[in-house]
Length: 94
Image 1: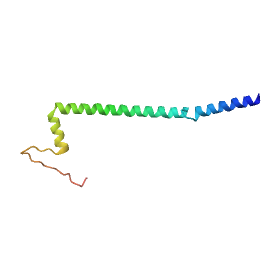
Image 2 (image 1 turned 90 degrees about the vertical axis):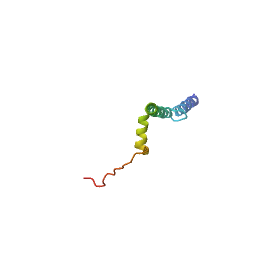
Image 3 (image 1 turned 60 degrees about the vertical axis):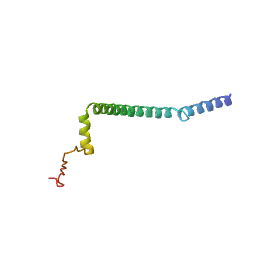
Image 4 (image 1 turned 180 degrees about the vertical axis):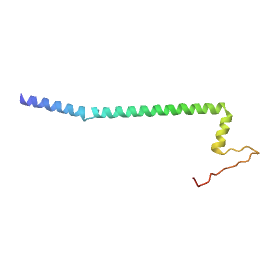
């Protein structure tokens, strides 16, 4: 009878070990849940970025003047018969 009780205790302890520390344990499930929630937050941020980029693309396609303005600012677009003036601020600051 003592041996049977000892066997049951060993079986229960091994099952408890697998639940708390083994493969698919409670701790591992919590870590995976945390990773899932972090990934979902990152996905929401990326979806928001994508929506903003799509809006920018749409506005650039509909408004050629906006496209020209961006080309002038970022790429230094100069039309024929225009003169480009660059103003360099002084290095000393008050």
